[in-house]
Every structure is written in structure tokens, then in C-alpha cells.
Image 1 (cartoon, one colour):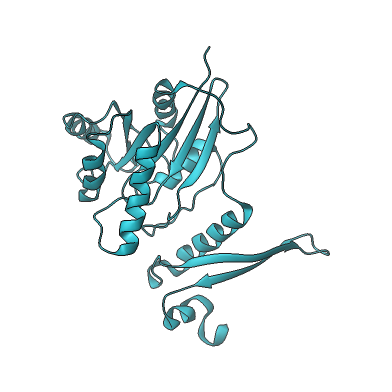
Image 2: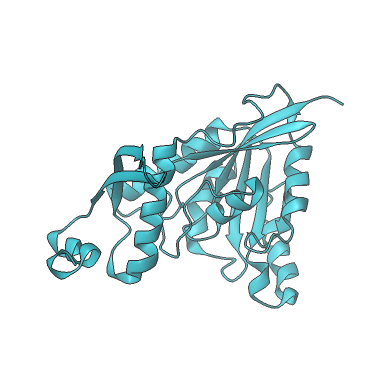
Length: 249
């Protein structure tokens, strides 16, 4: 059997489940998950090792119609991934099949000369009868090589999706060693965990424009616990109070 490999970009609107799917595919958390939109700002690399192939996934910022310089930069980052990789996986949401935020991706993918697979996510959230009309509607676009319904949260349909992607890989080497699952550093993961907790506990009080920088990490000699010095950046002084409480309490 010929060994195959390839790079696959995961595209889609904000909050459609891209990070959840990447975490499901890899069997561990490598991407931040939050109900807030646009929590993925960086292109995160996740590597799935198979006996006969290696699939390298890139989780990208959410694609939507741009409004600000930050949004334009994030969307361009996502589309740059689509141009650089061997395959493109677009995620749509079963509850919003004609989401206008999909339009930038559909426009860019229409003339892209490489395998394109559409996954319709969140099929666990409603009746299955609605799936066939949605699949037929996207099939008429003539963009995608295959359309697969999935639930990234529950894992339903993910194996079929992986089989579809694997079938479109080309012969090639393993680009990464078998013990490597991501290209991100430990400090990056810690900063993402902090950012995820901020979004979870502040909910709608704090916008997603929060940045975290890990300055120092060491091990407590007595407890063996990891000690982290991290700086959290927000946009306004009033947002500091939301994070640390009145008077720093």
C-alpha cells in the first residue's frame, strides 16, 4: 500500500464547530472552544497519524464578510490556508444552511482546483429529515467533491469524513514524526487555555478581543505544580474590572 499524506484546511464561519472538529479528529484538545465567535485567531496545525497516511489539519479563523482590519486579517489568514493546502474542508451548520457568512468561502472555493469537501455539522441538534434538502441544495452549487453530515461534538459521521479525506490524499512522505500532534508550543496552549476560561466565565461581558501572553513558566519545587506568569490584555480600563473584580478581588 502506498503511503499518502496531505495538508487540509478547515474553513467555515465563526462558531460552526471547526475547533471542536479538530479536537475530535485528534482525540485531544489542540484548539480553543468557546461560544464566543472568532476565538481562533491563529492557524493551528493538528496532525493525525494513520497506518497508511498522515493528515495535517489547519484550523483557521472564522470566515465572514469583513468589517474591520482585524476581521480582514483573520479572513485573509483563513483563505491563505485554502490556497496553500492540498484539500479544503468547509464546515456549514445544519441549522443555518444558507448562512450569509458562508458566501466569502463559497466564492473563493468555486474556482479552487483542488479537492473540496463540505461537512454539514451539528446534525445532533434537530430532525434528520431536513438533511437531504440541505445536501441537495449544496450539491447544486457544483463546488464540492463530497458532502457529509456530521456531529463534531458527538463524533457522528466523523469517521466517514476522515475516510473521504483520506481517499483524496496523494502519495507522499510523513512530514512529521509519529509522536508529534501539533506545531504549537506549550506556552501557546497555556495562553489558549487561559483565554478559553476568560470567555467561559465572562460570557457576553467581555468581547473576544482579549490577548494572553505567557511570560514565565516553572515548577513549584514543593508541590510539583506548574507555575505560570501570564499577562492578559484587554481593550479598555473598564474591562480590567470585569476580569479582576472591583478593587482586584
